[in-house]
Length: 110
Length: 115
Figure 1 (tube, rainbow over the protein chains, first blue to last red):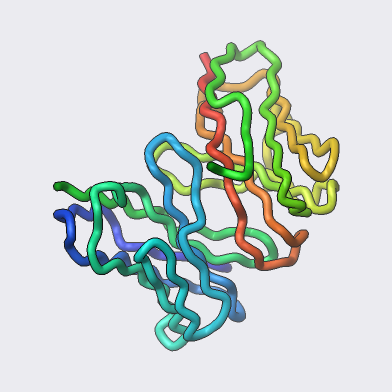
Figure 2: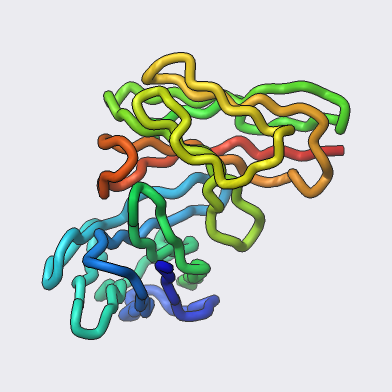
């Protein structure tokens, strides 16, 4: 079956630091891949997506590239802000069913 | 602002109560979903409606009863819940029906507490 593995958190960074959250997946075929973000007390927001190999999704300074050869979809941001503190979920979709990673909490301090 | 609206935002109920959660979207999406999320965990799929018909039920106990009155509305009827059912209940929608690979758009959820 499908599965998604994310790095364990929390990830603690200072403002303006570089962010990487690793995500690898196992799936049949070539599923679409997503990063969702969940701010405290809120639902999940779609952060970015990629639908095929070598696609780069980007939004709000975050980006991730669909790497078929390494089955990875790592999330990166060049300079994080305090407002980026949230839980980040990597996910793939198969037959309308989202498979989520366990989530990675990001804490950014001033 | 989220385009999927859920009400109420918070709900406290006893184990003998009957209540309903509501979800509404006006994006013309044809699939709608209910998820349950426990603290520090990813969402778990409960039900999927595609073109107003129940397509997926992930072996959810019968004390949870979904309903899709029309393409914009999704309800979750609750009866005789247990304390372990306390969680954040998320509604989501996507453009395509079951089998598609479009992203799902989530509401802010209803935080449910069972006394």
